[in-house]
Image (cartoon, rainbow, N blue to C red; front, side, top):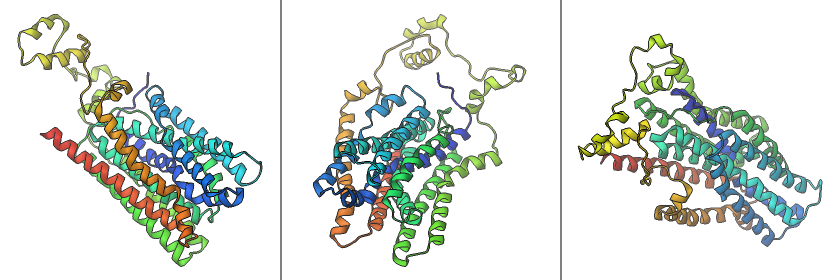
Length: 407
């Protein structure tokens, strides 16, 4: 059984750490940065390169297995598998591009599938965990994390041009070693916590996180353009990357503020920590049972209160009643497959994402065909627009969900 960390601060620590993992999970967006090197160094034609793009998409979007594992094992297991996929997949690509070993085409295709499948493992681990830690703000949390995922291409572009000096070989080495090391560092902080109870301060915290992500997006787009137009020197490029890292740390300012300026504990937090209190300090129970097993016969006496009493009895374990989940509640995989909503969302995602990844996979070739040898600006623009759509979609969906519940 998973031990839940209690308190209002741990969920925000996990969200701040999840931002870094979400950025790392955008490794599949890097294909335009090294695809031209695969084509020129290994002698691939356009059709072979397109099929490698298909492998990139299959690996990134096949996430059934990570979803099943995330429901049975703690997040660190999912993160570990994602890190191993990165190490093995991108390691094989690096060996081939560096011409250390000569590998057949089919093996490179499988290696790229494994490498980009790490995106599904990493993204599932942080998204599922944080949506459970913030059950009252799922849309906002999903929008924030998916928004940072959209910015990942711009973050990698900043590192690629500023630190790696536009070297595809160094980029593959960075993906091979950097992402697994990051997973090892943050996996302690990404864990299930006692669900946060939203209050007015949480709303401000979410607005701060969203503002920090918008500032990061504008900064990345601006610095990428400046780096290309002005051809800044190495010290300036390193400074750009350092400031980017500071902006990525911005969400961690929330748990730091909670540590320095502690507020009075909420009743929900006291419930989560009641086992830590000495028994003599607890003068009365925090939760008073309203129904016992001795008066279950009263359910039939009052039709109006029967539903409420039944729910209370179910919570106390006195009564068990099988019921199908309603819209907005948690579904098992089999229950979801029987719903039209699931297949509608599946088709919308399949068709909507398909057009985007088609452009992304051929972004380098489109730029070269138009006479643009450096496609970093195109990728940064793509990443920024991707970020705006994701962050806006999460905020808008959360707004309308709250309106429905208020009605």
